[in-house]
Image (cartoon, rainbow, N blue to C red):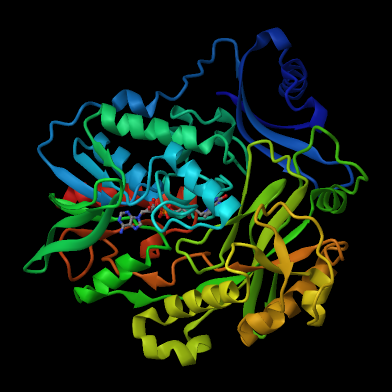
Length: 524
Ligand SMILES: Cc1cc2nc3c(=O)[nH]c(=O)nc-3n(C[C@H](O)[C@H](O)[C@H](O)COP(=O)(O)OP(=O)(O)OC[C@H]3O[C@@H](n4cnc5c(N)ncnc54)[C@H](O)[C@@H]3O)c2cc1C
């Protein structure tokens, strides 16, 4: 039996294999030459004390004990024979991982996405960043890999009971991600690496007989007697036209920003429900300041990663919390239609930007939305959209971010000048205290004051608050049976991922895709 040990290493010792062997030998009572293999199971950074350390959970195999590496999941893939076909709307993590799982089950997936392939998307991202032009089909949320491709690429999930996290991570590794995501306590890929991984998944889908089609905007469903038979798409590329696609089942994995899909479902009387979500702002600090606070060092040890934080408090019975913290990251314009201001955060794998940003949001419940109840199931979605449009209307028609210095946001007054930012379109001072809905502003103001007390140094003139952080999760749920994962009233329609209300993040969306694919395989 291998010995299970915890080995503590200083940041500069972390990649020193000789030292790891020495420490493993000392702690296991073996001589270094008696150790056949050290398997790292988990590596976590512990910055609670004055000197941060890495804690490694390892298995030590003595000579004669056999370490068997896990076989590659892709080794089990075979070309599908095409007998059964499933349409997947959306090439995000939910859609692509559903496609991989279907291939494993011998079923042919056909993935349709309104956006472009990962490479071609870049031009549209540049157009948003530099010229404020938002393509409603190709942006930070829409296109190959979905909202996950040009995201921050944090792969940590709390949804460990919802599926097989290890399998999702291992598939990412088998498609080009670094293997340390399997052992890091807070794994991260980065926006520069994600597109390559996504393109490799695309290649696998095609290699084993699946199909992926871009610029296919699903505009209608083909229905017969409470059963879905297929979808209609509009081609949004250079040759406009419509196509019909028929299959044995349809997985709807369109993400939290596909408002037209919710409207389409509603038009066909396919039940959807309004759902609580969270809305707020993004706060940006100099990364050096966050490092100083978290590591208690004037200058970060070069062997330590950019520091992060996680803050939460209760204001009048509602949570205010930091969300999607991006150390060494950038704030990006994540609108999915012209006329909206939406911000989000991302980072490169090295997390080396001089800024740290995170969403700071508060939950929006049904009780908060009395004036929007006239919109029925769209109450939360209309509220979300209205806030985004109001923030856009306050500006000059570009994607410049309406912002205030943190102390001014809390004091409810305009800032004369704003600090530098990672947000390429730039910030301008705007009265966020008037532009945000009063109940949101009030909770955020109180919450941010509390964060200033919880984390000394957080409350500073150097921090900027920018609106709107509004795409935290879906404001609509598409119901499904808990066992069959099928829509209760529409046979063979499978809501999936974040858009259905069943995931919040890359890995949970990927796992939901896998779960749904398994349910589909049982149903068809
Ligand atoms: C900038 C940014 C940073 C993020 N950072 C992180 C992070 O660090 N870690 C993390 O876990 N999560 C992060 N997220 C969230 C994460 O990306 C999402 O939770 C995840 O992508 C949801 O996966 P999904 O497959 O359910 O939906 P999506 O990824 O949203 O994919 C939906 C797909 O459906 C397509 N689609 C929509 N409507 C139609 C239609 N009518 N016809 C055809 N196709 C359609 C879209 O084009 C899109 O490709 C981030 C998101 C953004 C925007």
